[in-house]
Amino acid sequence: MAAMLCDRFCQFFTDKLRRIVDTVATRLLTAPAFHRQPVDRHDPCLLDNLPGVTFDEVERLIRSMSTKSSPVDFMPTTMLKTTVGVMAPLIVRLANMSFSTGVFPSSLKQGRITPLLKKPGLDQSDMANYRPITNLSTMSKILERLVLRRLTV
Image (cartoon, rainbow, N blue to C red):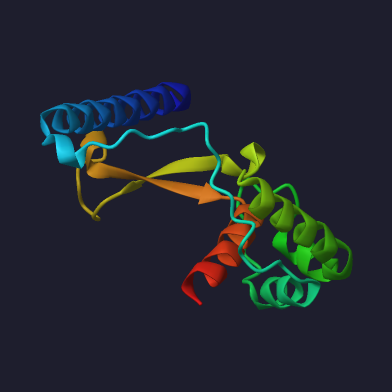
C-alpha cells in the first residue's frame, strides 16, 4: 500500500513538472525575439572572484546552526558541531574549490521529497492537495549560506 502511494505521488509530481516545462517552452517559443537569449548550460559560472572561505567563518556558521538534521545527511548535525575542528577545514576546501571551478558537488544536489498537505482538512486522496517539500543535506545548506553571504555583502 505504501509503495503504491509513493508511486502515485512520484507520478503526480513528475507529470506536474512536465506540464510546467511544456508551458515554459511554449511561452519561450512565442516570446518576442529580443527576450530570447541562448543559454550555454555547459559553461560553469566561475565564482573565483568571490572572497575565499575561511576556517573561522565556517566554524561560526556551523556553531550557529540548529542541531536539527536532514534525513539525507551523512553525518548528524550534532556530530558535525562536536567535530567542527576537524570538519571545518574540509568544508573550507570544498567551498573554495566549488567557487573556483563553478561546480556545485552533485552529491549535495540530492534531497528527500516529502508530500505535505497544503491545508488541514483537505482530501488526502487528492494528490493536487499536496505540495512537495524537499529536505536538503546540511552540507548543501552550509555551501549555500557561504555563497549567499558573498552575494549579499
